[in-house]
Image 1 (spheres, helix red, strand yellow):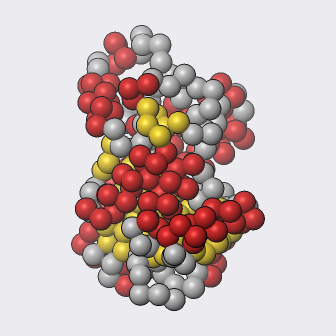
Image 2 (image 1 turned 120 degrees about the vertical axis):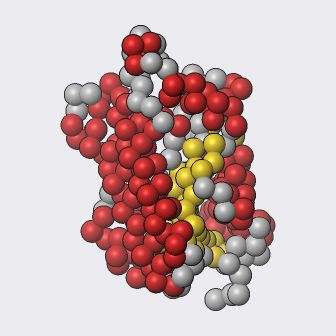
Length: 246
């Protein structure tokens, strides 16, 4: 164990997870990567060790297996200083409209699992008196749209959870960050029609997460343009909003 600060990235094999881990390691954090397939995380761990000379741990974590969360946290060699939750599932809206199992998986992956695991870490952090929790939510949670309301509603719930947790945990020395990336060019969005000026690369999100941790920012729109876009969308009258085709 070193005297450096430490962070664990839940969903470490995703493009944004890799970018967050790299930003944290570059800043001198020892990093742990957690995901369902530990073997798939090995190349990233080796790369981080070689590039930044930090300790990198690997842990098996399944956001849908909520019964394992207590044992997962207890199995960590030490309680980290920072927990970053990247986990999530975009899913397919059209399938989720009639397939309850698919809709359930989207809701559990984006709301239930991330909320419960960060809530569990929050209790440990509050007992210690410090720590930072980062939840990657989405601008899709700012208002439900016809094209992705199953995913958006789960992210809305996650954002609300983080907001409440932030208000409570701040009294005990624990900081909670909500990150809303907007469009990000990743494997998850491959094939989607992204709007160029509103789209960022994964490393931009990783740097935004690191900056939010160090500056103790509460809510981050990775692209400032999204803050304005969502302000406009949130204020549209319902009669107008329901006629929009997006």
